[in-house]
Amino acid sequence: MTASTLAAADSRLRDHGPWIRLHFSSAPGDHADFHYLWLRHNCDLDRHPTTNERIVCSSDLPFRPRPESIWIEGDPEALHIRWADDASGRVSAYPLAWLREHAYNLGEEVAPPPSSDTTPLTVDAAAIDPSDLPRKVVEIVDAHGLAVVRNYGPDTEALIDSLAAGTGLQIRGTHFGRIEDLRTDNTTNQNTDQLGFTNYPVRLHTDQPFLEVPPKYQLLQCMRKADEGGENYVADAFQAARYLEATDRQAYDLLTTIPIKFHRKQKDFERIQESPLLDFSHPDGFIVRYSYFTMAPHRQPFALMENWYRAYNTFAELVNNPAHQYHVALEEGDFLMYNNRRMLHARNGFSGPRWMRGIYFDPIS
Image (cartoon, rainbow, N blue to C red; front, side, top):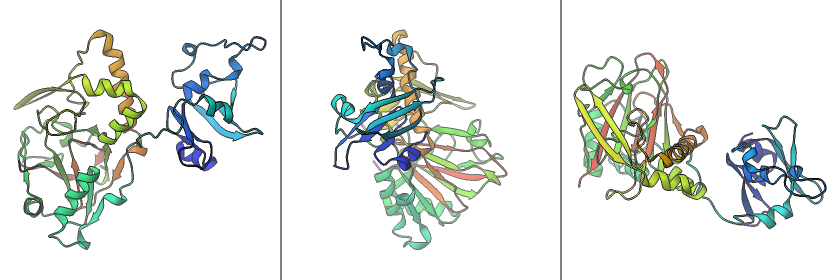
């Protein structure tokens, strides 16, 4: 069952994965959120018919029970749930008055999950004064983490110069060189032994997490699109962190305090950096370090290891949900620019001679 299905069925209900929001009325703040596990644990069908005592322990239940269907009906009204993981076809019923009485966050607001709407992030370079474009793009990136620019053209050096002149950003070279030519037949860059120079899918990650201070901005310019596939997608890790803080504080606390090691070893390069995955205490501001292919074996205390994995997987599940990702198919001459310390980026696998150019920028200190 999806959030859109629930919303279409009854505007009073909104599915959020492991929990549901119920609006008791249309009045602002007259709502409550309930975890499906809490609801399943409080099903009246699991009470003794004579004593009315509970006969099921929460440990007997799936940790994340999922609904097959949800609806409100009856007089007085009750929330009904048919559970997908119960072979008996169980339908639990919860009177709305009972839910209001036992609500554990009545009227509270939760930070929204990461967005997927690219409309406010998109700029048509052909429709804006070229001298205003750099400032406009960086303003969008600073506000939202990502900008999508259409119809700029293929001149990479002119783009670099305009950003320097219009915003004061300076290009930052890395162990790949000044500009990355992300193509399978690369002959221009150093240290090309990494996934970005193949046609293999590259899942969500940040670049250079093994540096003490990763580059702030990254630009990806499409020089030639793939014959098939190769679309980019981006997720807002800052918004995901705030959502996690509001919905799973234990996971948030572990991901913001437990250091993990990132290790990049290539033919002519090696670096190691230890830091929390979500770093709100860095002198340069929030930095997310998220890179499944450069993450070293974890060495958390034994008593924390399973909880840390649960926290990491909860965050990963959130950002890997397509509903929480910006999906962008770049045409030749388009480019993306995003905050590499805030956003996670990825691309689908592809066929054909796809060519993207990657450039890092930092503000002039």
